[in-house]
Length: 341
Image (cartoon, rainbow, N blue to C red; front, side, top):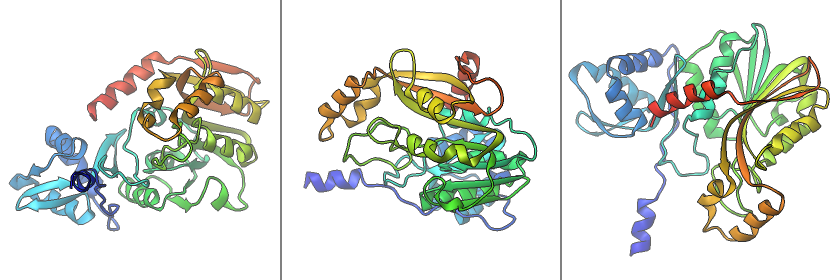
């Protein structure tokens, strides 16, 4: 009996991805709701608490329900079907945290804020985003780039990305492609700019985990696969940016070494934005089969720390590696992320 009840209590809350009609004004309506009723917006779309509507809000909520952002619990009481994040003038929807299926579309975190604040690409750039997730980065790329292609292996992520791009239209359309990394691109011209926020978490062999974060035994499986072919997709003078977590020792991350191997003549910036003891990042898997042996393999490899890093590779300039600790920028991003909790 208890096992059945526990299963019901921990079951995934699964809603369809939201949808927007052509010419939708949803972004403007969400913005109005946020500006005029910030506390109530946060209660509903960030804290996930049902909300009784006020008479002057009913038009908003009717449209929110039609788009699949909320559903009606009882007359006048609405519950969220998604989380909605205000970021850099955009409104971005993701899955609820209670969506526990492997295809969960990840909530925005510190990483997305940091990336958004670094996207200073020149006008006219041919851009590619890998591991697109909610589409938040492609929303901003489409404001400046001359073209944007965005790839994800998850159909659900692409549905969310399409919704977010539709309600936050940029200056150019985004070509959303389903597949693994460069696979769906076919024979294309190299890109001026490539951006990736790949799956990053170390996961023990055989353990189930969200697709958006499953990075293999040391968290770098997707990064290694990506870097095998990425250089040939980057145009001369191009730039590659990535946010990821990486194992390493007390001073350096492994991903810095992988980037130097992939780009022996490139200039590499490593922005160290966070670091956690290895065991802190492994805690979610302590009950997994084979945990002790997996942990020991990581320790034997010399890993003591999991680094949060934003990396930038440019193909022009000296072949050097520069390590930066952008404390002021990190603090600014943390302050924004705290508003979402």
